[in-house]
Length: 399
Image 1 (cartoon, rainbow, N blue to C red):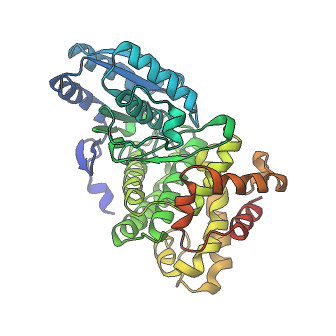
Image 2 (cartoon, one colour; image 1 turned 180 degrees about the vertical axis):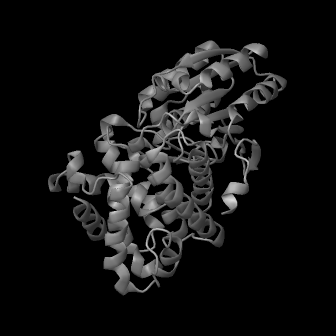
């Protein structure tokens, strides 16, 4: 296959609205990025990251050296957890403001990068809070420069304008979408991801699969999103089993990272609908639930609902997983069962009950789907009308 003709050690520039450095050794581009920051007059930055992945991956050593060489001071906020909260963002932003930071470097997967993006907004609006940001209480038009150093291959946040932050007391997990959230530069280095365990490898990759299935089938679906969707699913179907079996396989990590990146671009253009709108209440209610796992569990039930409306597109993009589909409504049982089978083989649990949910939670989940800021916008562009009955059926079918 042509993939073998690609030199994964050659670092190339991928230009969307963000300039992304993709390839083994891309972390070393941090030297060039630090030079750009210095030229922009940035003398202080805040590093937003999780508790240890920035060190274990080897990213921090390179970042620290690059900043020291350019005499850019930094302060480290390393408390970000999965499904980061408004409290994390406020704490990091306050620390950054007191320090005088005028740029953000986020190191990690979706959670640290999303938190970093939110901090960047609050540094541009120092009188605002994360809750005001997440509940859309003020217009957002600017942020300080954002550098994203990606440590997982799933969210696509390093190339898009989105961020997700939780308001814990309300179980809200809204999706922010502002043009100022595009990172200035991003680093996608597969060598930083070889320590991802098999389950996490699956969860982040299934996040990317969901991004493209939704982006290709929204009311805003377009040929670009559909083309990227087909490529994403084909690449993940091929390389996810390899990465699960051999986490240090750099070629597998490279292509899963590439798939995640183009999936982020796909939903930056086609947006999302039911699966993400219904997963956010799940991990809003139970923050320990991995986002990609929640998505994977409810995906078959969502596809069952939307296949009659978008069968031709789904038949095409799902062909690497479920070959031989024609797109006719009578294929719904087949695509449902085959998708569940593939997800199970990829390490995704079959039922929400395995994660502690029950039918008693469904009313609360439906309420959150309709009331969480921003999720109604996703529901409004679903390819079928997102009625309470449809949402209830998806949740119950996934229990």
